[in-house]
Image 1 (cartoon, rainbow, N blue to C red):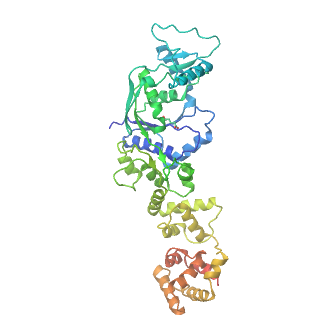
Image 2: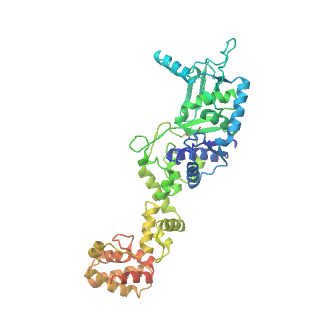
Image 3: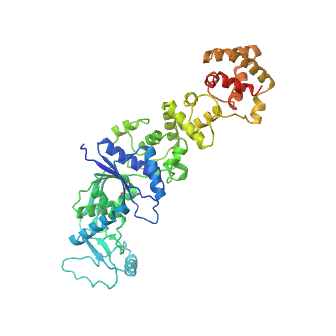
Length: 465
Ligand code: GLU
Protein backbone atom coordinates (compact mmCIF):
# COMPACT_ATOMS: atom_id res chain seq x y z
CA UNK A 1 0.00 0.00 0.00
CA UNK A 2 1.06 3.52 -0.55
CA UNK A 3 2.30 5.74 2.21
CA UNK A 4 -0.46 8.25 1.57
CA UNK A 5 -2.83 6.69 4.07
CA UNK A 6 -4.28 9.36 6.33
CA UNK A 7 -6.60 8.45 9.19
CA UNK A 8 -8.11 10.54 11.92
CA UNK A 9 -9.61 10.27 15.35
CA UNK A 10 -12.25 12.92 15.82
CA UNK A 11 -13.62 12.86 19.36
CA UNK A 12 -16.21 15.29 20.66
CA UNK A 13 -14.83 16.59 23.96
CA UNK A 14 -18.00 16.11 25.95
CA UNK A 15 -16.57 13.54 28.36
CA UNK A 16 -13.53 11.41 29.07
CA UNK A 17 -11.97 8.99 26.59
CA UNK A 18 -13.85 5.76 27.21
CA UNK A 19 -13.20 2.25 25.96
CA UNK A 20 -15.18 2.67 22.74
CA UNK A 21 -13.43 5.91 21.81
CA UNK A 22 -10.06 4.47 22.74
CA UNK A 23 -10.62 1.50 20.47
CA UNK A 24 -11.59 3.79 17.58
CA UNK A 25 -8.45 5.83 18.20
CA UNK A 26 -6.32 2.70 18.40
CA UNK A 27 -7.62 1.27 15.13
CA UNK A 28 -7.19 4.59 13.30
CA UNK A 29 -3.70 4.97 14.72
CA UNK A 30 -2.72 1.38 13.90
CA UNK A 31 -4.00 1.60 10.36
CA UNK A 32 -1.90 4.70 9.72
CA UNK A 33 1.14 3.10 11.35
CA UNK A 34 0.65 -0.13 9.42
CA UNK A 35 0.78 1.73 6.13
CA UNK A 36 3.40 4.30 7.01
CA UNK A 37 0.68 6.91 6.89
CA UNK A 38 -0.41 9.84 9.00
CA UNK A 39 -2.70 9.82 12.01
CA UNK A 40 -4.58 13.07 12.59
CA UNK A 41 -6.26 14.14 15.82
CA UNK A 42 -9.22 16.44 15.48
CA UNK A 43 -11.24 17.77 18.37
CA UNK A 44 -14.87 18.23 17.36
CA UNK A 45 -15.75 20.93 19.84
CA UNK A 46 -18.53 22.76 18.01
CA UNK A 47 -21.11 21.69 20.57
CA UNK A 48 -20.05 24.54 22.83
CA UNK A 49 -22.67 23.79 25.45
CA UNK A 50 -21.29 20.30 26.05
CA UNK A 51 -17.59 20.64 25.18
CA UNK A 52 -15.15 21.42 27.98
CA UNK A 53 -11.41 22.02 28.20
CA UNK A 54 -11.27 19.32 30.91
CA UNK A 55 -12.70 16.81 28.46
CA UNK A 56 -10.12 17.83 25.83
CA UNK A 57 -7.41 17.30 28.42
CA UNK A 58 -8.87 13.94 29.46
CA UNK A 59 -8.82 12.79 25.82
CA UNK A 60 -5.23 13.94 25.34
CA UNK A 61 -4.19 12.27 28.61
CA UNK A 62 -5.91 9.04 27.67
CA UNK A 63 -4.26 8.96 24.25
CA UNK A 64 -0.85 9.71 25.71
CA UNK A 65 -1.26 6.96 28.30
CA UNK A 66 -2.18 4.47 25.55
CA UNK A 67 0.75 5.67 23.45
CA UNK A 68 -1.40 6.85 20.54
CA UNK A 69 0.58 9.84 19.37
CA UNK A 70 -0.99 11.90 16.62
CA UNK A 71 1.22 12.96 13.71
CA UNK A 72 -0.89 16.04 13.08
CA UNK A 73 -3.15 18.01 15.37
CA UNK A 74 -4.93 18.36 17.62
CA UNK A 75 -6.98 20.54 15.30
CA UNK A 76 -9.96 22.24 16.90
CA UNK A 77 -13.09 22.76 14.86
CA UNK A 78 -13.90 25.94 16.75
CA UNK A 79 -10.73 27.41 15.29
CA UNK A 80 -11.79 26.53 11.77
CA UNK A 81 -15.08 28.44 11.61
CA UNK A 82 -13.84 30.85 8.97
CA UNK A 83 -12.94 27.95 6.74
CA UNK A 84 -16.37 26.32 7.06
CA UNK A 85 -18.04 29.63 6.28
CA UNK A 86 -15.83 30.07 3.26
CA UNK A 87 -16.86 26.66 1.89
CA UNK A 88 -20.52 27.48 2.53
CA UNK A 89 -20.12 30.64 0.42
CA UNK A 90 -18.48 28.59 -2.32
CA UNK A 91 -21.34 26.12 -2.30
CA UNK A 92 -23.94 28.89 -2.40
CA UNK A 93 -22.12 30.37 -5.36
CA UNK A 94 -21.89 26.99 -7.09
CA UNK A 95 -25.56 26.25 -6.47
CA UNK A 96 -24.87 23.12 -4.42
CA UNK A 97 -26.37 24.86 -1.40
CA UNK A 98 -29.16 27.38 -1.04
CA UNK A 99 -30.82 29.69 1.44
CA UNK A 100 -33.97 28.47 3.08
CA UNK A 101 -36.34 30.85 4.90
CA UNK A 102 -38.81 28.31 6.20
CA UNK A 103 -39.75 29.26 9.74
CA UNK A 104 -39.99 26.90 12.67
CA UNK A 105 -43.80 27.19 12.57
CA UNK A 106 -43.88 26.25 8.90
CA UNK A 107 -41.61 23.28 9.54
CA UNK A 108 -43.82 22.15 12.42
CA UNK A 109 -46.89 22.39 10.23
CA UNK A 110 -45.13 20.46 7.46
CA UNK A 111 -44.14 17.76 9.91
CA UNK A 112 -47.69 17.47 11.25
CA UNK A 113 -49.08 17.07 7.72
CA UNK A 114 -46.52 14.45 6.84
CA UNK A 115 -47.14 12.54 10.04
CA UNK A 116 -50.88 12.67 9.40
CA UNK A 117 -50.19 11.08 6.01
CA UNK A 118 -47.92 8.53 7.74
CA UNK A 119 -44.93 9.84 5.82
CA UNK A 120 -41.41 10.21 7.11
CA UNK A 121 -40.99 13.85 8.17
CA UNK A 122 -38.63 15.62 5.82
CA UNK A 123 -38.00 19.04 4.38
CA UNK A 124 -40.05 19.45 1.23
CA UNK A 125 -37.60 21.54 -0.78
CA UNK A 126 -39.81 24.62 -0.93
CA UNK A 127 -36.79 26.95 -1.15
CA UNK A 128 -34.76 24.64 -3.33
CA UNK A 129 -33.97 26.31 -6.63
CA UNK A 130 -34.96 24.26 -9.67
CA UNK A 131 -34.88 25.21 -13.32
CA UNK A 132 -38.19 26.83 -14.21
CA UNK A 133 -39.32 27.08 -10.58
CA UNK A 134 -40.21 30.44 -9.12
CA UNK A 135 -39.15 30.79 -5.54
CA UNK A 136 -41.18 32.82 -3.05
CA UNK A 137 -40.02 36.29 -2.12
CA UNK A 138 -37.65 36.01 0.94
CA UNK A 139 -39.54 37.26 4.00
CA UNK A 140 -38.17 40.54 5.35
CA UNK A 141 -35.94 40.42 8.42
CA UNK A 142 -35.54 36.64 8.42
CA UNK A 143 -32.04 35.18 8.54
CA UNK A 144 -32.07 32.08 6.34
CA UNK A 145 -30.41 28.77 7.06
CA UNK A 146 -28.28 27.20 4.36
CA UNK A 147 -29.32 23.80 3.05
CA UNK A 148 -27.36 21.32 1.02
CA UNK A 149 -28.86 20.56 -2.36
CA UNK A 150 -28.92 16.80 -2.03
CA UNK A 151 -29.26 14.80 -5.26
CA UNK A 152 -32.84 13.58 -5.70
CA UNK A 153 -32.14 10.55 -7.89
CA UNK A 154 -30.11 7.42 -7.60
CA UNK A 155 -28.41 5.96 -4.60
CA UNK A 156 -25.46 6.90 -2.51
CA UNK A 157 -23.41 3.80 -1.88
CA UNK A 158 -20.13 2.85 -0.32
CA UNK A 159 -18.22 -0.34 0.35
CA UNK A 160 -17.96 -0.17 4.06
CA UNK A 161 -14.70 -1.82 5.06
CA UNK A 162 -16.43 -3.52 7.97
CA UNK A 163 -20.11 -3.78 7.08
CA UNK A 164 -19.89 -4.41 3.35
CA UNK A 165 -21.80 -2.51 0.72
CA UNK A 166 -24.33 0.01 1.97
CA UNK A 167 -26.74 1.79 -0.36
CA UNK A 168 -29.15 4.54 0.50
CA UNK A 169 -31.62 5.97 -1.98
CA UNK A 170 -31.17 9.70 -2.32
CA UNK A 171 -34.93 10.01 -2.11
CA UNK A 172 -34.53 9.03 1.55
CA UNK A 173 -32.31 12.02 2.27
CA UNK A 174 -33.67 15.52 2.45
CA UNK A 175 -31.75 18.76 1.99
CA UNK A 176 -30.09 19.01 5.37
CA UNK A 177 -29.03 22.25 7.00
CA UNK A 178 -25.32 22.99 6.71
CA UNK A 179 -25.41 26.45 8.30
CA UNK A 180 -27.83 27.71 10.93
CA UNK A 181 -29.54 31.07 10.73
CA UNK A 182 -26.75 32.61 12.83
CA UNK A 183 -24.23 31.37 10.27
CA UNK A 184 -22.70 28.60 12.37
CA UNK A 185 -22.00 25.45 10.40
CA UNK A 186 -23.61 22.18 11.47
CA UNK A 187 -21.88 19.03 12.64
CA UNK A 188 -22.11 16.92 9.48
CA UNK A 189 -20.82 19.77 7.41
CA UNK A 190 -17.75 20.48 9.56
CA UNK A 191 -16.80 16.80 9.44
CA UNK A 192 -16.95 16.86 5.65
CA UNK A 193 -14.83 19.98 5.26
CA UNK A 194 -12.30 18.62 7.72
CA UNK A 195 -12.04 15.18 6.15
CA UNK A 196 -11.56 16.92 2.83
CA UNK A 197 -9.02 19.52 3.98
CA UNK A 198 -7.14 16.99 6.07
CA UNK A 199 -7.04 14.66 3.06
CA UNK A 200 -8.38 11.75 5.07
CA UNK A 201 -8.25 8.50 3.10
CA UNK A 202 -9.79 6.14 5.67
CA UNK A 203 -12.52 7.15 8.07
CA UNK A 204 -12.56 4.60 10.88
CA UNK A 205 -15.27 5.42 13.40
CA UNK A 206 -18.12 4.06 15.46
CA UNK A 207 -21.16 2.78 13.62
CA UNK A 208 -23.32 5.34 15.37
CA UNK A 209 -22.19 7.49 12.44
CA UNK A 210 -23.40 5.20 9.65
CA UNK A 211 -26.48 7.39 9.18
CA UNK A 212 -24.30 10.44 8.62
CA UNK A 213 -22.17 8.81 5.95
CA UNK A 214 -24.50 9.11 2.94
CA UNK A 215 -25.02 12.81 3.61
CA UNK A 216 -21.32 13.35 4.08
CA UNK A 217 -20.50 11.50 0.87
CA UNK A 218 -22.98 13.60 -1.09
CA UNK A 219 -21.46 16.82 0.21
CA UNK A 220 -17.95 15.59 -0.57
CA UNK A 221 -19.05 14.81 -4.12
CA UNK A 222 -20.67 18.21 -4.45
CA UNK A 223 -17.34 19.73 -3.44
CA UNK A 224 -15.47 17.64 -5.99
CA UNK A 225 -13.58 16.01 -3.13
CA UNK A 226 -12.33 12.48 -3.17
CA UNK A 227 -14.50 10.26 -1.02
CA UNK A 228 -12.53 8.38 1.63
CA UNK A 229 -13.06 4.73 2.48
CA UNK A 230 -15.27 4.18 5.50
CA UNK A 231 -14.92 1.52 8.18
CA UNK A 232 -17.69 1.63 10.77
CA UNK A 233 -16.88 -0.23 13.95
CA UNK A 234 -19.64 -2.06 15.70
CA UNK A 235 -20.48 -1.15 19.21
CA UNK A 236 -19.03 -2.70 22.31
CA UNK A 237 -21.40 -4.51 24.63
CA UNK A 238 -20.92 -5.31 28.27
CA UNK A 239 -20.06 -8.89 29.25
CA UNK A 240 -23.76 -9.48 29.90
CA UNK A 241 -24.66 -8.47 26.35
CA UNK A 242 -26.23 -5.21 27.48
CA UNK A 243 -25.05 -1.76 26.46
CA UNK A 244 -21.65 -0.97 27.91
CA UNK A 245 -22.20 0.63 31.29
CA UNK A 246 -19.99 2.13 33.97
CA UNK A 247 -19.72 -1.31 35.53
CA UNK A 248 -17.88 -2.71 32.57
CA UNK A 249 -15.79 -0.40 30.53
CA UNK A 250 -17.75 2.78 29.94
CA UNK A 251 -15.35 4.54 32.23
CA UNK A 252 -12.41 6.73 31.40
CA UNK A 253 -9.37 4.83 30.13
CA UNK A 254 -7.48 6.66 32.88
CA UNK A 255 -9.54 4.66 35.36
CA UNK A 256 -7.63 1.61 34.10
CA UNK A 257 -4.41 3.35 35.05
CA UNK A 258 -5.89 4.04 38.46
CA UNK A 259 -6.96 0.41 38.76
CA UNK A 260 -3.45 -0.85 38.11
CA UNK A 261 -3.56 -1.90 34.48
CA UNK A 262 -0.52 -1.48 32.28
CA UNK A 263 -1.29 0.52 29.13
CA UNK A 264 0.08 -2.22 26.89
CA UNK A 265 -2.39 -4.68 28.43
CA UNK A 266 -5.25 -2.29 27.70
CA UNK A 267 -3.96 -1.72 24.14
CA UNK A 268 -3.68 -5.47 23.57
CA UNK A 269 -7.15 -5.92 25.00
CA UNK A 270 -8.67 -3.18 22.83
CA UNK A 271 -6.97 -4.59 19.75
CA UNK A 272 -8.90 -7.83 20.19
CA UNK A 273 -12.16 -6.05 20.79
CA UNK A 274 -13.71 -6.63 17.38
CA UNK A 275 -10.54 -7.52 15.49
CA UNK A 276 -8.63 -10.77 15.36
CA UNK A 277 -5.46 -12.30 14.02
CA UNK A 278 -6.06 -16.03 14.07
CA UNK A 279 -6.14 -17.24 17.65
CA UNK A 280 -3.55 -14.77 18.87
CA UNK A 281 -4.48 -13.19 22.18
CA UNK A 282 -1.22 -11.89 23.57
CA UNK A 283 0.76 -9.72 21.19
CA UNK A 284 2.87 -6.61 21.33
CA UNK A 285 2.01 -3.20 19.96
CA UNK A 286 4.57 -3.79 17.19
CA UNK A 287 2.96 -7.08 16.20
CA UNK A 288 -0.44 -5.44 16.23
CA UNK A 289 0.73 -2.70 13.90
CA UNK A 290 2.26 -5.30 11.62
CA UNK A 291 -0.92 -7.37 11.51
CA UNK A 292 -3.69 -4.84 11.69
CA UNK A 293 -6.06 -4.70 8.74
CA UNK A 294 -9.67 -3.80 8.15
CA UNK A 295 -10.57 -7.22 6.74
CA UNK A 296 -10.51 -8.90 10.13
CA UNK A 297 -12.70 -6.45 11.96
CA UNK A 298 -15.89 -8.24 12.86
CA UNK A 299 -19.16 -6.62 11.85
CA UNK A 300 -20.92 -7.99 14.91
CA UNK A 301 -20.81 -6.27 18.29
CA UNK A 302 -17.81 -7.01 20.49
CA UNK A 303 -18.31 -8.01 24.11
CA UNK A 304 -16.33 -6.55 26.91
CA UNK A 305 -14.71 -9.26 29.00
CA UNK A 306 -13.08 -8.15 32.22
CA UNK A 307 -11.56 -11.58 32.92
CA UNK A 308 -9.68 -11.46 29.64
CA UNK A 309 -8.41 -7.96 30.36
CA UNK A 310 -7.26 -9.11 33.80
CA UNK A 311 -5.54 -12.12 32.31
CA UNK A 312 -3.69 -9.94 29.81
CA UNK A 313 -2.69 -7.53 32.53
CA UNK A 314 -1.22 -10.34 34.60
CA UNK A 315 0.74 -11.54 31.56
CA UNK A 316 2.17 -8.09 30.94
CA UNK A 317 3.06 -7.65 34.59
CA UNK A 318 4.96 -10.95 34.54
CA UNK A 319 6.91 -9.76 31.48
CA UNK A 320 7.55 -6.25 32.73
CA UNK A 321 10.90 -5.02 33.87
CA UNK A 322 11.29 -5.00 37.68
CA UNK A 323 12.57 -1.42 37.72
CA UNK A 324 9.51 -0.20 35.85
CA UNK A 325 7.15 -2.08 38.15
CA UNK A 326 9.03 -0.74 41.17
CA UNK A 327 8.67 2.83 39.92
CA UNK A 328 4.93 2.25 39.41
CA UNK A 329 4.51 0.71 42.86
CA UNK A 330 6.50 3.48 44.59
CA UNK A 331 4.47 6.15 42.78
CA UNK A 332 1.24 4.45 43.83
CA UNK A 333 2.41 4.32 47.44
CA UNK A 334 3.34 7.99 47.29
CA UNK A 335 -0.19 8.78 46.11
CA UNK A 336 -1.49 6.87 49.13
CA UNK A 337 0.75 9.01 51.31
CA UNK A 338 3.04 6.08 52.11
CA UNK A 339 6.68 7.01 52.33
CA UNK A 340 9.23 4.29 51.77
CA UNK A 341 11.25 4.24 55.00
CA UNK A 342 12.60 0.79 55.49
CA UNK A 343 13.13 -2.58 53.95
CA UNK A 344 14.48 -4.08 50.80
CA UNK A 345 14.92 -2.64 47.32
CA UNK A 346 11.50 -2.25 45.65
CA UNK A 347 12.83 -4.07 42.56
CA UNK A 348 13.52 -7.17 44.64
CA UNK A 349 9.96 -7.12 45.98
CA UNK A 350 8.63 -6.80 42.42
CA UNK A 351 10.65 -9.83 41.32
CA UNK A 352 9.11 -11.75 44.19
CA UNK A 353 5.50 -10.78 43.51
CA UNK A 354 5.09 -10.12 39.80
CA UNK A 355 4.33 -13.75 38.97
CA UNK A 356 1.24 -13.60 41.12
CA UNK A 357 0.05 -10.01 40.85
CA UNK A 358 -3.15 -9.25 38.95
CA UNK A 359 -2.46 -5.52 38.81
CA UNK A 360 -0.08 -2.76 39.84
CA UNK A 361 -2.08 -1.91 42.93
CA UNK A 362 -1.46 -5.39 44.26
CA UNK A 363 2.24 -4.85 43.70
CA UNK A 364 1.98 -1.59 45.61
CA UNK A 365 0.16 -3.42 48.42
CA UNK A 366 2.96 -5.95 48.57
CA UNK A 367 5.64 -3.29 48.57
CA UNK A 368 3.83 -1.43 51.32
CA UNK A 369 4.18 -4.45 53.60
CA UNK A 370 7.94 -4.52 53.05
CA UNK A 371 8.76 -0.86 53.33
CA UNK A 372 6.56 0.41 56.11
CA UNK A 373 6.23 -0.46 59.74
CA UNK A 374 3.94 -3.48 59.83
CA UNK A 375 1.26 -3.72 62.47
CA UNK A 376 -0.47 -7.05 62.20
CA UNK A 377 -4.11 -6.97 63.15
CA UNK A 378 -4.52 -8.05 66.77
CA UNK A 379 -6.36 -11.22 65.85
CA UNK A 380 -3.74 -12.22 63.27
CA UNK A 381 -1.11 -11.64 65.90
CA UNK A 382 -2.96 -13.64 68.57
CA UNK A 383 -3.71 -16.48 66.19
CA UNK A 384 -0.21 -16.97 64.79
CA UNK A 385 2.29 -15.57 67.25
CA UNK A 386 1.56 -18.03 70.03
CA UNK A 387 4.11 -18.85 72.73
CA UNK A 388 5.38 -22.02 70.96
CA UNK A 389 5.62 -20.05 67.71
CA UNK A 390 7.61 -17.32 69.41
CA UNK A 391 9.95 -19.91 70.90
CA UNK A 392 10.58 -21.25 67.40
CA UNK A 393 11.11 -17.74 66.03
CA UNK A 394 13.62 -17.07 68.82
CA UNK A 395 15.80 -20.01 67.81
CA UNK A 396 15.32 -19.29 64.12
CA UNK A 397 16.44 -15.74 64.80
CA UNK A 398 19.65 -17.01 66.34
CA UNK A 399 20.33 -19.14 63.26
CA UNK A 400 19.51 -16.33 60.83
CA UNK A 401 21.97 -14.11 62.65
CA UNK A 402 24.73 -16.53 61.68
CA UNK A 403 23.95 -18.06 58.25
CA UNK A 404 25.40 -17.12 54.91
CA UNK A 405 22.65 -14.90 53.47
CA UNK A 406 21.16 -16.90 50.64
CA UNK A 407 17.94 -18.76 50.03
CA UNK A 408 19.40 -22.23 50.52
CA UNK A 409 20.99 -21.38 53.87
CA UNK A 410 17.83 -19.59 55.04
CA UNK A 411 15.79 -22.60 54.06
CA UNK A 412 18.14 -24.85 56.04
CA UNK A 413 17.84 -22.59 59.08
CA UNK A 414 14.04 -22.93 58.92
CA UNK A 415 14.29 -26.72 58.57
CA UNK A 416 16.70 -26.97 61.50
CA UNK A 417 14.31 -24.91 63.58
CA UNK A 418 11.41 -27.20 62.64
CA UNK A 419 13.42 -30.26 63.64
CA UNK A 420 14.51 -28.69 66.92
CA UNK A 421 10.95 -27.81 67.94
CA UNK A 422 9.18 -30.78 66.36
CA UNK A 423 7.12 -28.47 64.15
CA UNK A 424 5.87 -28.70 60.59
CA UNK A 425 6.79 -26.14 57.92
CA UNK A 426 3.62 -23.99 58.24
CA UNK A 427 4.04 -23.89 62.03
CA UNK A 428 7.28 -21.98 61.54
CA UNK A 429 6.72 -20.29 58.20
CA UNK A 430 3.36 -18.71 59.01
CA UNK A 431 4.45 -17.05 62.27
CA UNK A 432 7.55 -15.88 60.44
CA UNK A 433 5.42 -14.33 57.69
CA UNK A 434 3.24 -12.61 60.24
CA UNK A 435 6.29 -11.32 62.09
CA UNK A 436 7.90 -9.99 58.91
CA UNK A 437 4.93 -8.77 56.88
CA UNK A 438 1.89 -8.93 59.12
CA UNK A 439 0.09 -11.40 56.84
CA UNK A 440 0.00 -15.21 56.90
CA UNK A 441 0.34 -15.59 53.11
CA UNK A 442 3.36 -14.53 51.08
CA UNK A 443 5.50 -15.93 48.29
CA UNK A 444 8.02 -18.62 49.25
CA UNK A 445 9.22 -17.77 52.77
CA UNK A 446 12.96 -18.29 52.20
CA UNK A 447 12.78 -15.87 49.25
CA UNK A 448 10.91 -13.33 51.36
CA UNK A 449 13.48 -13.55 54.15
CA UNK A 450 16.32 -13.25 51.68
CA UNK A 451 14.83 -10.15 50.05
CA UNK A 452 14.56 -8.41 53.42
CA UNK A 453 18.26 -8.68 54.10
CA UNK A 454 19.58 -9.89 57.44
CA UNK A 455 19.39 -6.65 59.32
CA UNK A 456 15.81 -5.76 58.44
CA UNK A 457 14.63 -9.35 58.85
CA UNK A 458 16.09 -9.66 62.36
CA UNK A 459 14.76 -6.26 63.35
CA UNK A 460 11.23 -7.22 62.31
CA UNK A 461 11.39 -10.56 64.12
CA UNK A 462 12.76 -8.90 67.26
CA UNK A 463 9.78 -6.58 67.54
CA UNK A 464 7.61 -9.58 68.32
CA UNK A 465 9.84 -11.41 70.75
N1 GLU B 1 -17.06 13.53 16.87
C1 GLU B 1 -17.66 12.26 16.63
C2 GLU B 1 -17.78 11.49 17.92
O1 GLU B 1 -17.17 11.81 18.89
C3 GLU B 1 -16.89 11.43 15.63
C4 GLU B 1 -17.09 11.90 14.25
C5 GLU B 1 -16.40 11.10 13.19
O2 GLU B 1 -15.54 10.26 13.53
O3 GLU B 1 -16.70 11.32 12.04
O4 GLU B 1 -18.50 10.53 18.00
